[in-house]
Image (cartoon, rainbow, N blue to C red; front, side, top):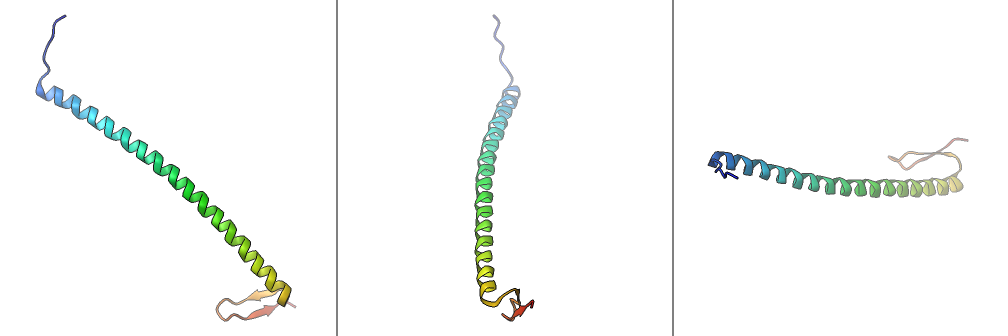
Length: 83
């Protein structure tokens, strides 16, 4: 088998491509991990919103029992009865 030497330019081109592949795979792995973290953060926020909705419903239920049906003006704090 005959052995031939690559030129410095050819060798450098191959090394550069290999390095770019490695960087791309590393970036893909980092992006995949970040996506996983973002999905977990999204789920935490959805759970928190659900918790806030339940708390809001409890407050409105308490106000309904105390004042009856109506609306609250959040600016003035006034309760306006629907009766």
